[in-house]
Amino acid sequence: MSKEPVKAGRTDPRDFLDIDALFSDEERLLRDTVRSFVADKILPDIADWFEEGVFPVELAKEMGALGLLGMHLDGYGCSGTSAVDYGLACTELEYGDSGARSFVSVQGSLAMFPVWAFGSEEQKQEWLPRMAAGGAIGCFGLTEADAGSDPGAMRTTARRDGADWLLDGAKMWITNGGIADVAVVWAQSDEGIRGFVVPTDSPGFSTNDIHQKMSLRASVTSELILDDVRLPSAAVLPEVRGLKGPLSCLSEARFGIMFGAVGAARACFDAALAYAMERKMFGKPIGSFQLIQRQLTEMMIGINRGMLLAMHIGRKKDLGTVNAAHISMGKLDNVRMALEVARSARSVLGANGITLEYPVIRHMNNLESVYTYEGTHEIHTLILGQALTGISAFE
Image 1 (cartoon, one colour):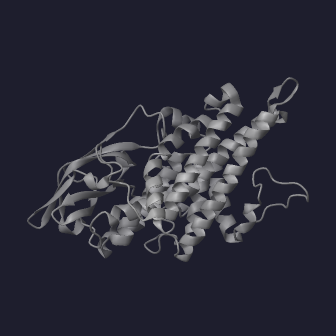
Image 2: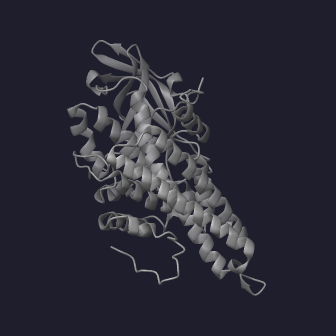
Image 3: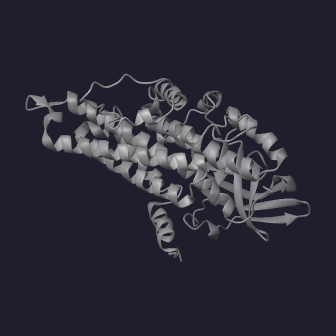
């Protein structure tokens, strides 16, 4: 579906560079389908969900019916879309709320992807079709209270006990943890770091949801507790050992964030632009004042730059020429940009900018988490520094 052309000599303030023209008809159709879903199913209630600190679990099956869960994976009930399609879906979901995009990212890129990439055929058949449909929810257990940016320092252990494995430890800041049916848990073992597919009804497995959050409130964040969780040998992901496994999953999730952050920024810009044209001060719209126009201009430039960056990296991913440092660059710069846009939009809205009647403060708070998770700003800076110099500055 193509949009109406803008009259000669004029620009569309919401697509200043006509980036829309760079997408195929199929890509625009998918994007517009997700945009309509967000408008119908998320935007009307998201302020209440954020204020109440809830995520409506029933959205999982609706997202599954749209083909959004594990959409960039092939087979097993997954849609098998392109990387750019997945990115555009993330952009629209995060326009609604970071919690909605986080749910889809964790389900597809962190929980389904390792099973799809490293799992046995039995694991794939058991979990992927249900997860793609939203009938089973997954989470990703890597981060610990004392092992965030240094996942190799994790204390969770897996030890053999006859033909079984016993898992002990705890994971922290786990999206979807309290509502998950299955957890992909990474643990230290005598064989190195291994991944395990852990049904959450396993004896010894429990969760504690994290409350009093001021960010990502419309998302479930939990602690996972593993107390002698006994698993059969078939629970281990057979095709990967070491940090390569979890780090490859993180790169998949960072790709979605790179696009999603543009959606959050666009939501803030849309609100600021509309407000600037409606709010009167000294007898005229505040959008007529120089300082407001400067703020709007900087927001617009950042969003257009961010989408072009995301789209270029997405095209490279579809061509098979992307590497992890490219995705780190996209995640770092687009989240930084989105935070700057959100803070500027908050300023344009004045006191109204701190209410949930407008989306800005919600996105601004959410982006503080997005700035940190799936690799902090500092970690991505060092990844890029290593790519430039060939020298690791992590230790």
